[in-house]
Length: 161
Image (cartoon, rainbow, N blue to C red):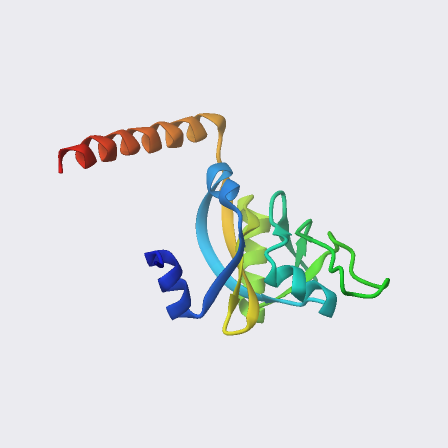
């Protein structure tokens, strides 16, 4: 028995490797961008096995290129001793005008680029970046209160049917 989400993922050709749910708690996501990523051969197997962590990772624009920092890709037990560094910076692939536009927004508006999820799309590894603005502590509390209220309403309505 397959769930609706897994069926949808199969239809789109997507297999989610890792998601950064904490980003939605810590930031307001204003805009999203799908990018490719440059990986080494020894990094692909841990991606297939979902040994990837996006926690505390971020992207930045340097000299017209996007770089992803602090994304952890676990070791590959079948690679040779010259495997990869788990937390090396990795280059992201996007159109030049998008890179320039996002870099300008980050510099002028005090925003940041946060990876939201990493996934396979038609056999290629993709990263979904979010242009984010930080939430204040009271914004986080307000979001939690709304989430709790929504859950209570769903619970009440679910019990009546």
